[in-house]
Length: 239
Image 1 (cartoon, rainbow, N blue to C red):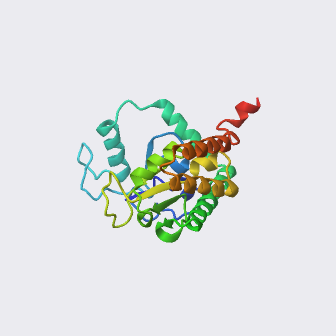
Image 2: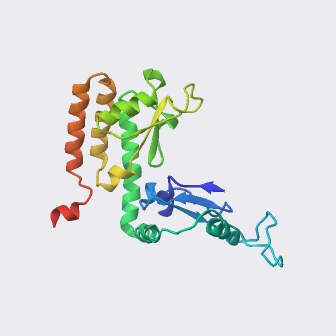
Image 3: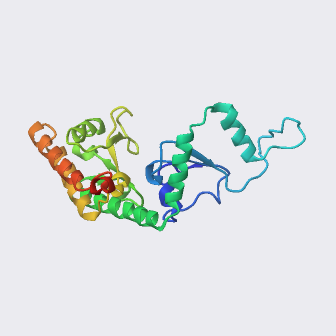
C-alpha cells in the first residue's frame, strides 16, 4: 500500500514516480497538489483476488480487491455520499487531464526549489538539502527556535506554515524543531520564482524579528500587498 496524498498532482503529470504498478492499493487525498476538494480516493492498479481469504456472501469465490474495498467504504464505514464533493472531484480530475495542469505542476517544483535555495542562502537548514517536490522541511535546531514558536510568529506576519517534527527530533510533536512549507497554493495564484525570493525574505525577516510586533505587522502588510497582485479569482475581478 502507498499513500500519495501530497504528491498526487505531481504524479498525475509524470513528474514523480507512479506507485500504482508496484502497490496493491494506493490512497490519496484529492486536495493538496491535486488541487481539488477536501476528500479522498482509493485506487487499485490491477484488480485481483484478495489475499485475506474474504469470500462473497454465497461463498462461491474470493472477492476481488476492488469488491473488498468498495464493500468496506459503502456500506462498511461510510454512508451518505456527498454529491457536491463527488462532482468537485470530477472537475479536479478533469483539470488534471489538461495541459495547463502540467504547467502548474512544473511551476510548483520550480517554486519549491527556488524557495528552498533562498532559505538556505539565508542560513536555514533544509532537511534533505533541498526538494524534488512541492514541500520542504526547515530544521530550526541551529537557530534554537521551536516549530511551534515560528509557526505562531509567521502567522502573525500573515504567512501560513505548520510546525513539523524533523528526523530524530528531541522536541515533542506538540512543539517540534521544524516547520513545513509548500508551494501549491501560491503557485495556483500565479506566483513564480521572483515571488518565492520575496517570500523567503519575508520569512527570514519575520523570524529575525520574532519579538518585534511592529516589524511583524509591516511584513504582514507587505505580504498582503503581494497577495493583492495575485487575486484568488482574477476572472471575477476583470469582469
